Image (tube, rainbow, N blue to C red):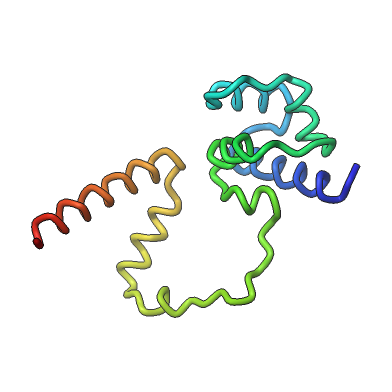
Length: 131
C-alpha cells in the first residue's frame, strides 16, 4: 500500500466519521451509489478506497467530498498550509459578516448549495436593476 493511498483512506475514514457514518465499505458503497449519476461502483471499489488499495477518479472524488462535506482537494491531498495564504480580506470584515459566514459554513452541503444559488440569483437581480 502506498503512503498516498493510505493517507487518502485515512482522510476518507475521518470524513465519513465526522459526517456521522461508520467508515465501512458497505455504507460507503450504498451512500456513493445513491448520489453518483455515472456507472455505479462495486463494493470492492469502496473497500479498496477505504483500505488504501486504490484512489478514486476525479469525478468520484468530487462526489465523495460532497457526500461528507469536505473540499475535494482536502480529501485527496490533505490540508497542507498554503504558502501565499493571506487573511487580509477576512480581517476587513466586520463581526456580523464573519458570524454570517461561519453560520453558512456550518450548514450541511446541500443547504450551502441552496444558499449559494440564492445569493447568485440576488446578485444577478441587483446587477440587472443597477443598469
